[in-house]
Length: 227
Image (tube, rainbow, N blue to C red; front, side, top):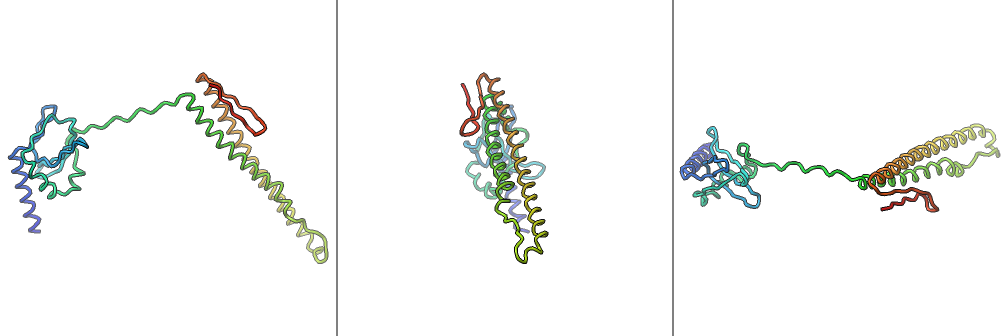
């Protein structure tokens, strides 16, 4: 505890002497800051310094764009102060008053009709591929899978359990039909949605002065753009 008190007194004395030496930052608005300069980073355009506020030593930072000039007679001692204050404290020093310039947010890029159409086409293409896959899976489930399930027959000892076996078989087939055609319906809905996106893309292309046409061919749905 005594060591901390002694270090604090030494640091206070050093900063007081530094202020006597008058390290000075002169702002463009005429303000002068008496302080101990710690670091001037041209690459980051930041000046870090130590100053006493309300009886406490605080590390501050300010952007050089607000600074007219600075006087740094205590430059040789700056490294010692930096180590005593701690690198982390210096790195995350508080912003000095309101002297900090923040770049305004970049304006959002407004998409052109051609760019919006391209986005719609990408959505439509993705949905179309998914819909074909879903419809195919539904048809396989509803039509082909039931054919792989053997129908129970009346032979030997099976004649006594045939009614129950056939009922279970019939329920399984019906369930597969319901699931399969339900999946087909979902895939068809996706396909309709994809066609809506294609229609939106065509309209956007027309509005941007370019043409878009959709047709069906031997290889499926074809999309043609005219520029």
